[in-house]
Image 1 (cartoon, rainbow, N blue to C red):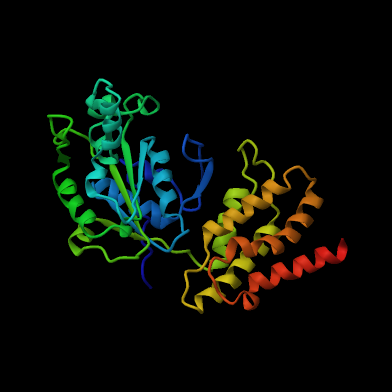
Image 2 (tube, rainbow, N blue to C red; image 1 turned 45 degrees about the horizontal axis):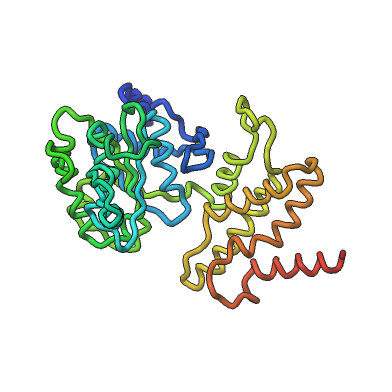
Length: 347
């Protein structure tokens, strides 16, 4: 008989060690993002602890809608650090992570014979803000000028949208932890500067360079256990009752609504996956639940549940069905048409 192994001692130098798998944490509303909720998984906690302790960026893989982007926000909230986010697009230039020069504004000022002020035309990128907050201050708009944060989390979202120049250009910054930007003479970052926690996401649309992958801690985000149960668990995190949380003493949505919405999404995923199309996922599920909550927020519980279930069948096709397929054979379309026929018959 094998002896039982003791549980390992928890690390004491990282705030992530204080989180337990399954914990639901509120993410407060910001100027750019609405209030949300994050349910932590053990894989997320462990990967962030390693990235934090090793000083390496965390590359998060997974299909769209699995919570990759929100993980950076949750990490920043846990650490009490400032989040700087950049979403990558096909025309994104690597230099933009450091700084942008607004040539259009400068030309307009020159034509209007406005006194040219260099600070007006340079915009610090997410890496400049994270590695050199003080030097970035004169170039920030008023709303961004805050007291020096305790630390910085950088989110580089959907890096696979760019070509290989972008991840390759990051290698030097990650290795040196310093760089130059034109508007200031002194190097940004360097010895003595606390490095940020960098979270990078990919939807796997394009393979990333091997040298870049070797510099990263890699987390593959995937639902744990049964997909339907995972969806419902995430739904409860956002719309279920939470003890001690103002406004969440009672569930915002009945379990029957969460269950039915999850059942429909699982059926719709199977239908589009069979056609080799990208299926709907957690993001579409939560969007539909949010809409059902908002549409009937003023009703009593019994009326609200009945109405939400009826409208769920009617609306889910618009939230879940994303591709130009043979609609008449798609389960979402069939649900919607049946709901419309029932509505017409009761009119």
